[in-house]
Image 1 (spheres, rainbow, N blue to C red):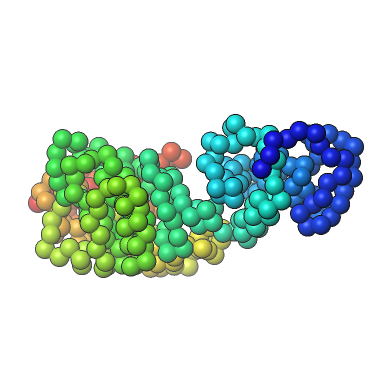
Image 2 (cartoon, rainbow, N blue to C red):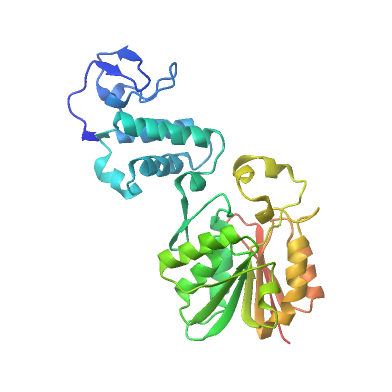
Length: 318
């Protein structure tokens, strides 16, 4: 990579194409629509990001372009602010193009770059885990509201995946002992690595829901279980195609896992303990009914930033 200076009137694209122009570099397109190749010699990082963002769909196109280019260059995104005028070298351009093609085919950016930000953490992500999403931070916020910082206690995270929820809580409540359960050993390996990278203690257990903690009770149980209906066409679209189906879908109405968790939770909660579950935007009424039927009190549903019902909670009074 080098700083932009005097620009050549002839550029050689990374695919071998040659084009001529007497225009200054700032007016040259970084992307050749006809040959679909990067003209690396005349492409600054700023232009590469701009043109990649125009190519990518969605509201987060520029963010995705920056993340992919940062991954190609093995640099943090913040590095671009001081180096926007640097030239994208041919090898880096080819790497960037390969990443963009993967995104073109629908592969999630988090899986392409291998990590995703959540809360204050940067978490490793693989094809074996659900990608942490911003709306799940609401579950963390609500959990923290019911966990005073000065109090000790045991908290259980069911279906931990990357460990996102458990580690976010642990990062804010150091006196709490976190236990995290997942059916997938591969997912637990990712959670274990994330805990080590964050320097946070996390007890990890393999098994289905409450089975690994038989006979144990907790001050709080949290979960972001699968809650999409098995036949939902969205499972075949977008990022969801690349995520583990077992972490997404649960029965014909999407509520099988939630039914089991809510029904079994009272036996694993201390008197006054809380259960918090993330669910689909249209499942609030059904989930509140499950909480009430299981004997929970102070049942309520919180809405996410989009105004959609997202997390239902209830207290077990014993």
